[in-house]
Image (tube, rainbow, N blue to C red):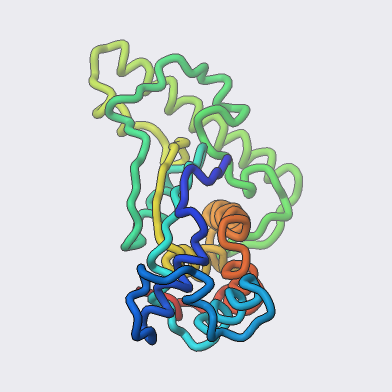
Length: 247
């Protein structure tokens, strides 16, 4: 999995502050400098005043201003299962790598056994892994070896069958039906800062599936670099409060 910030609103926290101050300003916000906009906020410096205002907004549930700045993330190598979960969120724009127009006819099925093209869940190789809704606990080495063998054989055979169907003239949009839900896909997604925090609440939670949780944690790390005051506060004081931020 590789998650990168592709593009984002410049100085998102300045924009959030301008939008929030507009609600209480008698003067037109676009005619004022940022220093003028923030002049009545407590703090010795402009950064202190930004932190004062942003913290106040988050503490009091005034989340509307956080909908103005947007960030776009490029995500490589997550499963179709993970994709199905993340695309359930509203107010997010997605572009998904197409399996109608992108075929995988040059992938060696034997390489699939080593992690090419298909995501391997930790439970396929880790005897101590215990997932949600699992009836049993940790298993012995022999059991997990059998798991890994069955999983590897199944996904490699699926890719081999897919490629045979392509060779027999079946269009990629139909041949893809035999590929596993763990097939890797690339995603570009754009969302505002409020929605990003909401996704963090839902998908970085302890009961989220391991893959989408890992993806979301990486997104939140990038978000803290992009909007440091907002996401440092979110990570320390708000994370995992499910649905509080829901639009």
